[in-house]
Length: 163
Image 1 (cartoon, helix red, strand yellow):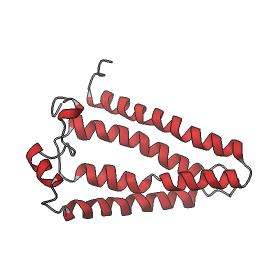
Image 2 (cartoon, one colour):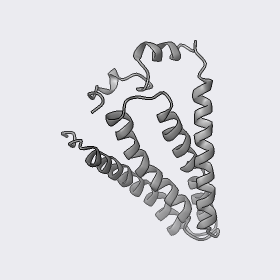
Image 3 (cartoon, one colour):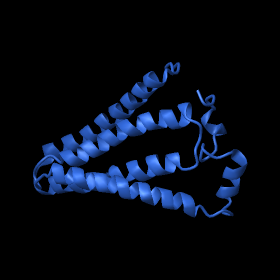
């Protein structure tokens, strides 16, 4: 493992930064344009991937929004795995989490489409589909996150944490 686990209260806001630098950045004394640009680049990639998936799996106003469901669930799976590698396996890198976690996965997943599609299903009289989508996305997303963490820990040879 790259580093030992710390209690949440001991971690800096950005665990990729040393505590002194993190405190300096929180005070607003150091603009982070480089990180913002990395996030924007990742977001462009993630957004383009989401667009392509929506083209590949279109849905009508009354159908189950499979593309958004798959985007959000697969994003949860990948994010769970990614965080294991970023926080427990790989050495910290200034741009890894902002680019991959915030940018690419943030651009690929979409809470706004999820809520708009749920509302559209409700307005069009498809309440059972809307509620299946609403609850199913949350439940399957949580399970996917857990699976991503478990798969990544196993792949990295990290034993599960005690409960």
